[in-house]
Image (cartoon, rainbow, N blue to C red; front, side, top):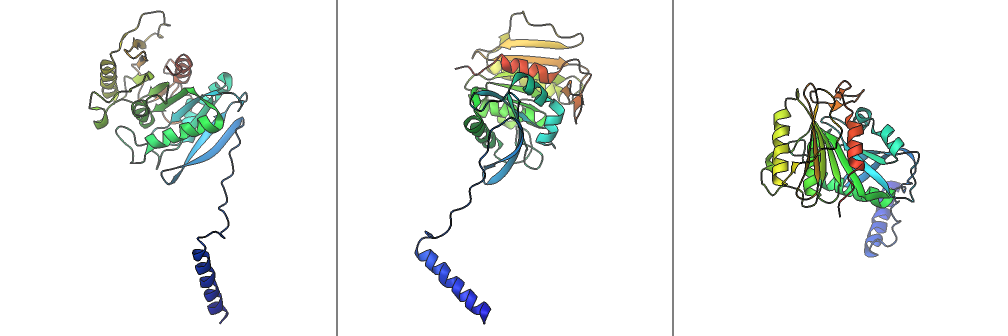
Length: 293
């Protein structure tokens, strides 16, 4: 009997609430507000109906009242933001140079890039994440950069085209500009996006990466740049080009390296004996290439 009465009472209350348009319902509890501060943060951002996870490193000198450069680092497949953090060592460089680093997780270990992996709206997610970090963490919109390896490197090229103007430069390691999306000659950035990339001669995809770089430079009218840059270490080569839109392209070729991150000392895909540090060279390239207006 008590259960019957309780059910009837619940129905009466539900009908009354419906008649009032839900005005008496308590408001939803808001998510805790992020508090920008130095340190390591595990955060989520809702996009396309899904909670997306990412790590954020803010250096000791971070001041939320001042615009700060931002690097977003995209992992390999299958991988995670934590794995990308370990591989690149970007946190240590960020502490010295005072920039933010974000490490997003792909869905099911991967990003929907140019060749694979998955069907998530990762272009939209990265757009949303960047906007959030600009608005909430005071990332400097003129100094937002994207780097990635393998699957994350492919997505970096995709974002350079499909989110043109959002990223000032990209740093691609063991990744490329290839696949069905890239087949039209019109598939290029509509605003300048500079590129630094690293290709290992022992990488089974090296030929695809090199073909893609030639296509990228042909479409953007890139020409070999004048000298004046440091020479590559013995056994390695570096090629620099300036494109018609004012962007720059730097290609590092490492004949003895495979599908790896040059100079990384730990983590999957590390290549400690590659002869150069991709992390250091990418940041130096980024620092010299704020967004062109």
